[in-house]
Image (cartoon, rainbow, N blue to C red; front, side):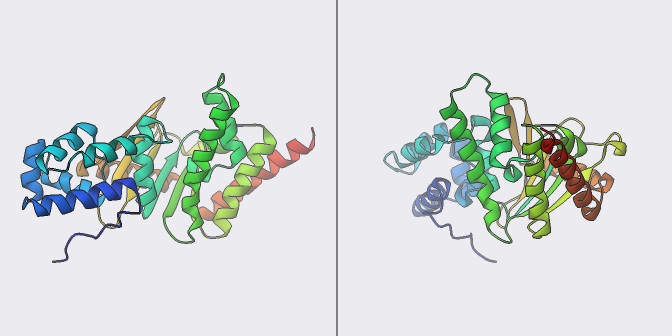
Amino acid sequence: MPGPKKLDPSSSPRALLGAELRHRRERSDLSQSELGELLYVSGSFIGHLENGSRSMQMDQAIKLDEFLNADGFFERNCAALEKSKYPDHFVEAAEAEARATEIKEYAPQLIPGLLQTEAYARAVFWEYHPTAVESVIDELVAARLERAQLLADPTVPLLWAVLDESVLRRRVGGPDVMAAALRHIAGLIRRHRIIVQVLPFDAGAHMALEGPLKLMAFPDAPPLAYLQALGTGQLQDDPATVKQYELTYDLVVASALSPTASLALIESVAEDYEHEAQQF
């Protein structure tokens, strides 16, 4: 049976915490289950911390310093990890997204963050924060574009998005911004970097009507589902719950247009926006 995956501690703060946790636990001759009992969590949760698939909370870090004689290591590094460029509700999801080998997403209203152009993202953030100073918006846009660098790799992660037709029709930033945003998506499709399907209005009711859904798969950890609402979000790791969301996504895909038909619709709507922009 293969041993646990070796983490590269330099790859991220979470990987550093996980690698150190595994080292100190083994040096203390504790199993994952035994250490979990001390923290009132499961042994599998300790495994998730060690392989970097879950975030360490501050109260857990303080207890680990005590149980493993770590001299404040976990508390110090956990505090550093909490200083994130993302909103609190999205921090763990963003970290998971960066490690995922497969991302499947249903977007009911807006172009997913990984696929947004700078102009589109800026328009979205101005609507979210209408009284913010420009420097704040600049930071938010920069963080979103940095996330999108995941797609700079030609093969990983696999990104499969289902866009509700309302995503194409909702005018964010005006016709020129929308045209460029849709052309950007079409370009990624034509370069075979992403898979995109459009769920047309005439598909009617479906299982994901209540909101967006993101599914993430990993080579060395169980899959996760992320649900987002107004100003909040929730990462789900319960296997039965995630499986139900996987079924939801599959049924949405079954109701969507084919990738070929979806590309044709995206480019057609982009052309309509371009013609409209030329009239001004």
